[in-house]
Image (cartoon, rainbow, N blue to C red; front, side, top):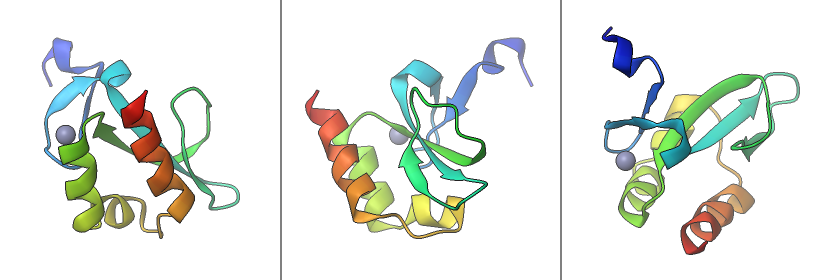
Length: 88
Ligand SMILES: [Zn+2]
């Protein structure tokens, strides 16, 4: 792995490597299985990253890429939150 990739994360949808700040992080809590957007919180568990753009989010939702990655259902509230993040 190249050193400059060390701080980059891969979008689950378009597979592009980006800085953490440019991605939305979704984590499935290891302790209770809760799935939530985890940008500022430090939740331990399986995480996926996704670009802050509509195309990546729609593609990921349509193809269930997030669900497949975290091996869990994505709650409706998290889907709504994803679109809320876009509008900010
Ligand atoms: Zn993407």
